[in-house]
Every structure is written in structure tokens, then in C-alpha cells.
Image 1 (cartoon, helix red, strand yellow):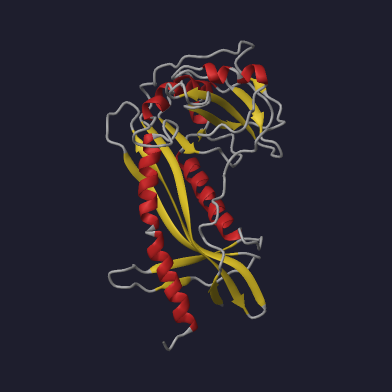
Image 2 (image 1 turned 180 degrees about the horizontal axis):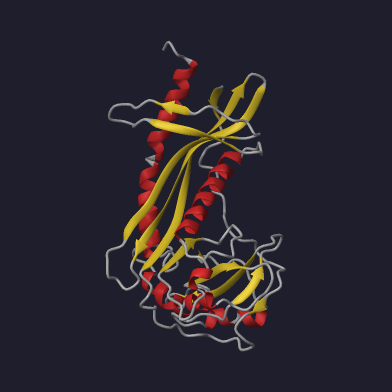
Length: 340
């Protein structure tokens, strides 16, 4: 197996993990015929643990992998995932948990590469171990897609491991002890799990025009009624609602300060689970408390404070991109000129 640096820069445009611009999914309104803003309720005293799950990835270099008569696209990169654990009533400090960082050699075309070890350089770069990972496609974007897919898979698994099941919180009165929010939309089908995705950008208009108008009218901590839908081209369903986190300056577009929250739903429309409605009712209060401010985060208020702190730590664990890139180039040069 021989690696050569690909002239296509690893700084190619980043994958946009956005939703489709529109959807033909049929919408079902779950809270009666009245479509109007709903004020938030207090956070339940039973809630003790809130987890915010997120991940990031970095492609250091695109390479081609040569093995006898095979030539496949590959890439050297890393993914990092983790969670912030906090108490919703502030009774203990927030902490970073379940942090994980992996470096990967991604190969396309179903090719399974060998693991790659780059020895440390004193004072410059620690030892770098890249584990093998293969993808079926063999295109120039395959390495970046592979990192993204792997990161999302680990995020989803962590969210599911930390979450309660719907059955656990179906008894009355509901005693909700823990809650899991995942940055971005949910990408698996698991209606038994109580996991909530937070979508920060509102490019997709799910609602009919008349109902869509309510989004611009929401006041801080208010939400829309819950609706049910399926993503176009996918079989799994979601419960969802919009929340306004904070008031925005008048020069901002009307969807500024909004997030869309979604939860798993069964494949066919059923009665709304009480636990979903409970979380929707106090989501405006909880998420507004966690909202960031513009002088600290340019993505405020949608990029929550815990999310920003987690991102910072995960990026630190990925390492300095320019240093790792130089070490990769040096390694490739040494492998081609072993006696130099």
C-alpha cells in the first residue's frame, strides 16, 4: 500500500449537513386545531441531568492509495465526539463527558487499508495513529463523506446510550430524570428512545404558508404547536416544534433566534406521547437559559453555550491542523525516499 498526496486541497468546501430546501411530507398537527403560540412552562423539579451531544471532524489531507493495480481515493482525518452534562437548575457545575477522538485513514471503493502510524517528532508533533475505515463509493469527496458519516454514527449512538426509553417515562405522573439534546437533526429511526435534535438553521419550510407565518411572530420562550412529519424520501417520522430563544434586532431576518426541535415518532400517526408534550412545554425555558450571546458567539443565540464549549474542546483534541498536515507531508516524503 502506497499513499500519495492528492493535489485537491483538504480545505475543499465543507459538507453542508443541511436539510433539503423543501419537503412534500404530509404534516399532521398533534395539539388540536388551534395554531397559535404556546408559552413555556417551568422546568420539572424531577429533571436532574441534561446532556448536549455534538461532534466535529477534520480532514487533514486527501491522498490516493495505490496497491498493485488498484487506485482509490483516500483521506487522513479525525473525528471527535462528546457530551456536556449539566443540571437544569444549576445545582452542580456543567462538565464535559464521554469525550472520544479517533484518527482515521478513510479509503473508498471498499478497499480496506492498513492502519498508519506516524512516529512522534520531539517538540513538534505527538505520535499519530490512523485506524482504517472503508467506504463503498470511490469519489474525490468520499474521504470527507466517510468522516462525516462516522461522526454522525457515533453521535447518534452516544445520544441513544444516554437517553431514557419512552416506556420509562410513560407512567403518570411523569418523572423525567434525564434528557438528551443532540446538535442537528436525528438521523436514525428509534421511536423507543427519548432523544431530541436541535436544528439551528431554518432552510426547510415544513409548514403550510398560513402556519409558517407564526414563526416570525413567536416571542422569546414561546413555541409552536407540535406537528408530525416524515422527511421526503425516508420512512421514519418525527414530532417537531419551533422555539424562539431570544429577541432579535429588527435588522435580523424573521427566523433569527429560532430553533426547531424534533423527536422520534412512530411510522404511523398515533396519540402524542405525554413525555414529548412535557418536554415541548418547558423547552422554551430550558433552551433560552442555554442560548448564547452575540458578543461571545457569532452563531448566537442558536449555538447553545454548552455546544460552544464542547466544540472548543473537541477541536483542541483534533490537534493543530497545520502541524498535522506538515507531519503527513513529511511522512509521505520519507516513505518515498527511505534512505534520505
